[in-house]
Amino acid sequence: QVQLVESGGGLAQPGGSLRLSCVVSESLFSFRSMGWYRQAPGKERVSVARFVSGGSPSYADSVKGRFTISRGNAKNTVYLQMNSLEPEDTAVYYCNADIVRSTDFRVTYNYWGQGTQVTVSS
Image (tube, rainbow, N blue to C red; front, side, top):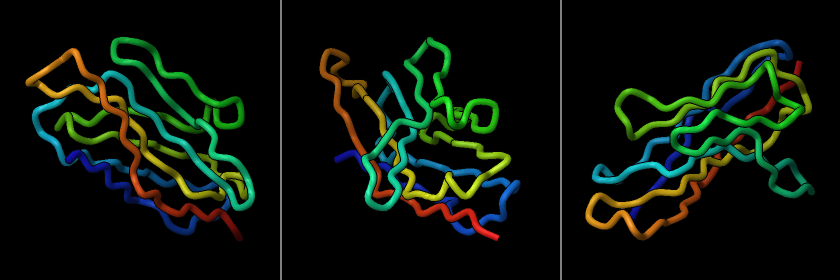
């Protein structure tokens, strides 16, 4: 079973930075797409950043120019670099990925991480 584990959340000051990491437990796989979502208390989960393999990343208007999604060289890790943080960025952040296993590229699976808390406050 594939697991996505987020880390890197915590408390940051307004204007500060955090880098979130998402580690995929499965080694024999390929990403089809990957993204980061967030959910603030009492609100719906929304997309923050996402890209399809071979394509350019897309970002929510609220984070454009401040957040960057990327894939690690190890191929089992994705990152969300968050700069110029604002109190409105406070939320639980979730990693999400569409993955195919090396044994069968015809079947795509979608997985979610458990989330990591990000709090931006002075």
